[in-house]
View 1 (cartoon, rainbow, N blue to C red):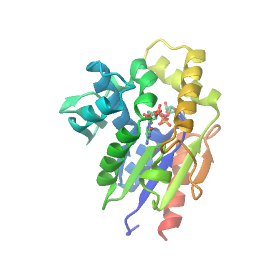
View 2 (cartoon, rainbow, N blue to C red):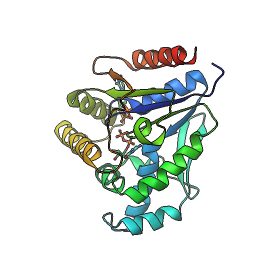
View 3 (cartoon, rainbow, N blue to C red):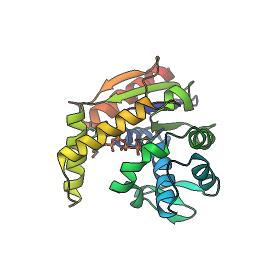
Length: 224
Ligand code: CDP
Ligand code: CDP
């Protein structure tokens, strides 16, 4: 595949976007850009500094003052805020609960989108998020809308927690996922939505390998 290609993978929480996006990027030697990690990094920084998460201007100011770096290492993508490694810290319940509110502010999104476009420019890249195909990269060569039932998505998250030896409550996870889906799909500015030209893949009964293989096949088709 010689021409530059951007692959956009959007969908709700727990659909498998980041796992599959990482795998596809690895197999095709593309850059992987986890846009959710960027919103999580800002949310973490705001919680640390006790910034009022309803205050759009304060969040905007905070964002202007921070560098968010996604560093690709042999052990995966590490997330840095002003040179401090926050990879684990952005995955806490506290960040999970507040990130969609932070991400709902238009000026925060405008700045994030600019950073994401700069990262993806002039390179083969796989981006995963909520608004990649509809807003960040409307001309992406391949757009995938990845879904799965709420039950299955909560089951996956539950399994993840259990594997890490962390406490987990399936019903709570399901509620959190449903609440975040609702906030992400109903916000006014660049909501979670399938782009008209996106290919929808329901991963409810598909393995990670099967989803990755179907996206790679689609990418090869588009490139030829
Ligand atoms: O991995 P998970 O699906 O739980 O979430 P994520 O992809 O890390 O994204 C966390 C949150 O950031 C989402 O629930 C959205 O509120 C927000 N987000 C967004 O608004 N736009 C994106 N392009 C990516 C994430
Ligand atoms: O990024 P997103 O929130 O869409 O989902 P993820 O974090 O990539 O995936 C959530 C969990 O589901 C991970 O533990 C994956 O290993 C698992 N998964 C799965 O079991 N089967 C799939 N087809 C996709 C993901």
